[in-house]
Length: 429
Image 1 (cartoon, helix red, strand yellow):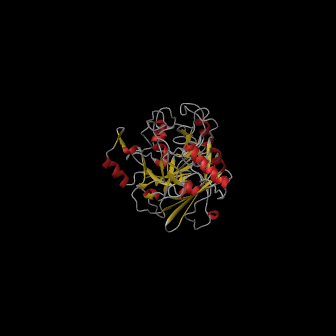
Image 2 (cartoon, one colour; image 1 turned 180 degrees about the vertical axis):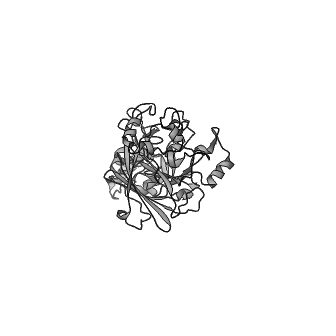
Image 3 (spheres, rainbow, N blue to C red; image 1 turned 90 degrees about the vertical axis):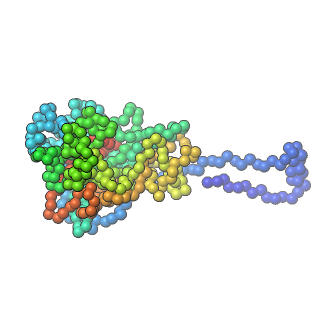
């Protein structure tokens, strides 16, 4: 906002004329008044909003109070992998390999398992202080002629409405926040999220001739020792299914395409509080040779070497955020393409302590945009309603047919965590 111009009345008088002439005589030229230094625009007052309201791009056509509900108890798994489950350290390895479901031995012991695995031990070398053992997830599902609807609710230790940040230290922009565990003195900043893994009943197995598969081993068949964050982890390896490997080597592209065509994959729906919810979507992907996005464009893009976007000051009244403001308002500080975001200007006037999100959020496209979502947070509880077509027509999506059975498993990333540090469920049919 530019300073107001100062208008001086034009006064006719000998004294004024003499002053102007004298100034010219002594300096040889006429002096103009120096403009006052431009002051930074005051930041607009941030409204306190301690809830997240849904985008409501769709409406559920029924009454959720009339839809049956069940509660899935999710537990903390630590570094438990498929290799560990079928290895000699697991007392039930022979049953697991034979295709007995995990819950045949561990049903209703989720809290006990979570407490043991959240503590330091062989399966958790870096425990998080205060990590809760289990999360109760309330699940409802319904369908009409065109869509499947799923409603998921859970209590959150913190809203996790925002993701990782960049922070200006007075000279440079530094990576700030991120997931737990975090270095001493650090401040975690990471989004809450919920995931659904699903496939056709008893379809995905660890090998063609095996009785073990997703229906019995759940998400653990996609979790391996060589994954990111695991015991022998590599930064380049994500979730994958054993059928995508032969002698520990990735199968050819042609073989992977054939598996996808035959439906030998796990459909993955991932709702994210910061990277998808602000535009009313979840991210649609699948697990096969890796954790893959469906074809098209996902709902976010991340800046890796410093800020790539800032807030559009002309539209929203500010170009950066402050941590205390983000704590007071859980909705305002998302960089949304075409709405609140502008290309980052490194020459802009920044103040120490300014922060910017690492992510640009946008409407997804193609098959990656099949999953719409209404996510809301109030009084310490998230409620997420997902909607997807029964048949999207895309080869990277599970087709739902009335009368058929499907396997589902759930995961929640709670309390500023990412990667393997989620809570997971058994498989439900």
